[in-house]
Length: 590
Ligand code: DGT
Ligand code: CA
Ligand code: CA
Ligand code: ZN
Image (tube, rainbow, N blue to C red; front, top):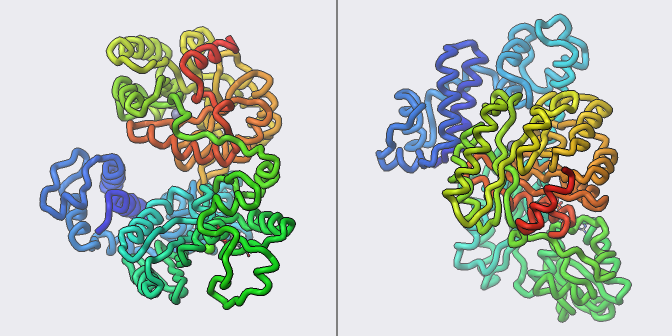
């Protein structure tokens, strides 16, 4: 029952509620710390609690331990339930508005009697927040942004938010002996950053088993509601109203069905048009010759009784249409079918093309591993190089390095290189782009670094003109190689800088400054469309994990999804260069 992540969430929520009701501030802070510790510890506290072997963990006191053990054993915590029950549900919901803290929620609740997100939206609309202490026009505007994000997020969930759920369901299906193959289709398979619902697909060895597989799907743990449960289709709600559909199709039709349900709808429509031009018809069952299809017997919910031209696997469908295989990430009707017809599909970047990491943090700032540990981990991934890029002085909460510390850090990186063989360790920095576009270190210091990433971290609510000028200044610095997470957006949480992207891209192309695809969730910044526009304009893209721990170096796969959705090929990516090429590229601007 449960996981570290669930427990962490529970403690964070308890801390919020305590602050909200103005109870025991120390305990609220303690619970916040417990939440962080739970997120970060390598110990599976639930499993350990169950077997009665939960070791003492720094930062987790006796009362928190009791809550953890109770939760691990019963799936519940009475403390939690009591606390939650002391506040109206709508007020708790208000805590989920991005950017709105417990103090403000308490104020709105106490002073204005606002008890739900909708009520807050109305109150703002009617000007009822006027005169509330500490709640000025700016704060109100940011509340509205937050409400909009919350509402959008409730409809479309972040990819990484639903991924564990989807993986778990796929694993469950795959370990079912009756199931031959199970895959996720839809926007999830296309790696969109948010998904509206999840579409699963499988085939079963014996058609008699289909209904039972659907039944088992609809009765698994965590199902809140069954929308449909038929012979070949099940549809359920899980995790507070999130929809998952499962369809079962015959093995012979699996490829065509996977293609159909992967979408996008726009891709499918164009593909069907292409089929028609070639005297064929394409549907979820297969690709058929029109003359045969028209004569065939068709029953709803069943494949037509003729042999398809193709349909068992996706590749055969594409190739029968004289197209190369179109990767799921490309299927958005953004020119991929035209490129397929012209035999000009991009050779999309893969994990094997990535030769190094150019953005990561160590214990010198806010990372959790040493220089050596990060380098060893990168080496174990088969990388040729890693750049250590800790935060600069203005990032106070991230323990950014003052100039003297940076100098010592550079020396420490050189020393680490003496000890770690088989990978090149570059000395770098993630320099803050300050509000006016100036950089956080003097040029002379930047010149001592092998790699400079410049990133905006704070003041992300500038207007377009200011924000764009700010980035342009950093782009034009001859010491800056890469702009890190250019917009600063967080998916479903904050919009980031409202940049004039064409202008930013043109400047980056001109100055030969690379732009980053930050692979870390919820950044994915640049997004797919902007990264594609940049690469088309000749801007080099760097896919960086921004890892703050060894495990996060693996986030590179997420960056690759974004890059593939951006049509990127290895030649457009900085960290697909060999070490030698990279060193030459780093010198181009200086
Ligand atoms: P989502 O769920 O909003 O994130 O996006 P999708 O792409 O997963 O859309 P969804 O779940 O409505 O449908 C899954 C796929 O099924 C979709 O990508 C293509 C296919 N599909 C659904 N409805 C239609 C339709 O009316 N026409 C065509 N051609 N395909 C459809
Ligand atoms: Ca979907
Ligand atoms: Ca769907
Ligand atoms: Zn960073």
